Image (cartoon, rainbow, N blue to C red; front, side, top):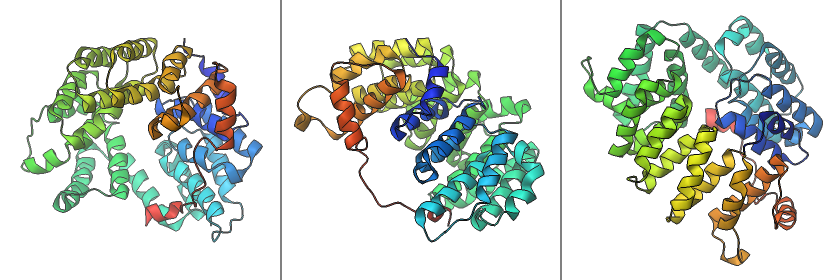
Length: 380
């Protein structure tokens, strides 16, 4: 059985940061619209300290905000920061990115207030301007904006992380135009009516993403057909798109395709199912697990099952990570740490739990002690 979301929310306040992060990722990865989650993140930051807050703040940019959480973010940015200290600089940058990703409807009246805060990074001010401008454009103007970076990246045959962020914002703005559903379906079916066919072909992954943000159930069979074609850049977007659409129709489409799928297609399907935390999705994942023989797919199934935070997942996943520690593959260690954190969120146990939990805490869940990377570098 899947545990209630109220219990998962309480785990956001757990003393162990990995457990807090596991609970938060459940909501971030299921594209929640629940505005009661971010206040718990704020409570965790204030309870356990800003020095250890970066991991959950980096996931909180996927959460819906409210006027009150926007208040808190702005107030936090008014604190004094030593930007020469990478940890302090990363903290303020993480706060600013959450604001940048928030619903433009919440930001538009506070635009000047946000950009006037001294600690709001200068390199994000122009991006915030763009985000707000795009949000309020009509479809033809937005489509022109969509084609512009498409043309640039097509000529280069490469999309940078910062360009992907811009594409994502334009796609989210386009998804508001529900009257254009038919046009999006036609584009997915490659019914191009414009002069630049090669550009639209290049932008096909973004059109797939758009179908996901619009939650187009009619797109499900088309996306499954594109998945069977196996074009890598398109496949990268199909899992999240199907996950955003969600519902039993997606789960059933994946079930119908499963037995004929190769490892790559199954991996995409499981990414979608990890976003769809429903009883049917969980049941099908358990069935797939019983039948699967490929180790690579079993690894993905383990992570997918644990994403559901269901007690039914514990025993099959446990079986995958039993044995001599020296014989475990690195991805099996990842599953073991994930299992311990998920079981802690669920308040569940298993024969090895106490030992594995002690080892997880002692090793910081296998994360190691890497030097911190400055977040600002990703926006240069």
